[in-house]
Length: 438
Image (cartoon, rainbow, N blue to C red; front, top):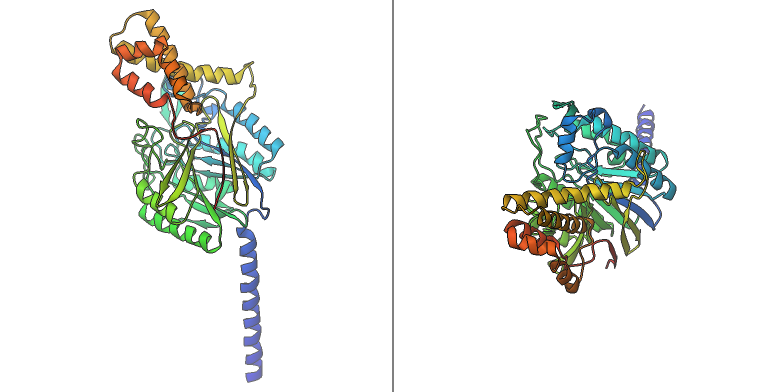
């Protein structure tokens, strides 16, 4: 009897050891997304996708478009399909979207965007997404019928995980229980952190409007440190992807855009030698590097994919070599011979509206002067949001000598302050970056 019991116990031990051993092997294999050293990924932010079924192109939708800050909302499906076709042709290892996937958190928009993105995963291209401030429990979720707006189902926390299960959550190495953040062991050299920096109701009771500002919650911060510690132990570099910014990329575009606890978070990133953070939110293309505790930390902000020039970043990683290049989604869509020019004019016209409204409010009534100044605002505004504002002092002098700038200076203190804040980027080139990590 004792012999039988002994053999039975031995058998159980062998089985348990085998399960643990092979279980660890399986877990290890599943954790590593890619085994190759050289990888390429594309980064997009703020697509603000709205499904065509939510509008009949009536008066209500027309009003929304007029207040959409230059977003292109009519041909998004066609535009995304062209971009997806390009990705399938060029085959990057992954596509990453840093938030504001939907216009205003419409569940059906998220579902339809997920259907489009599924084409990429079907072709072996990994897709990773994180929510933006417009995606979860957004009380602005609407459909537009005639001259009316009708409330529709928003995206709950559970919805987001379910709809985008194939785009990050199933490939995650680890999840944060207190947010929609997760981590991915990408390859033998790199670890990626995808962070939910948004403030939204967690009781699935959407507020009237989404919260613009963001933060890294206390428990999430602890989880982040554990992930960074793990990567450090494995001698891996960590890249971070989030929606909100860690730096004020423009003195007038910081409140509600920079994390509420950015200083604390930057200290954590410096402690663990994180070299690059990718974000979005401000819709302006910008690259900025600052030093915290003797550690240079670069933030690359992608402009909104819903506005001209519909930019995306191409990143190539190989060992300690990092290369970033902004590209644009140039293509034609149905009924439009020149889509890139169409969306550019759309965005410039939105800037012109800002110029007209501010100058008229300031008392300027001369129509010729209004036209000149408004056109000037539109063009300078486009340069800034496109990331083409890294210019010399001589170029600035030339721009300030233009009639449009003089008219603005003489008539609107607010507009002059805004133009002065976007006319020149003095820190670094915004459309490309090459560096070697230590």
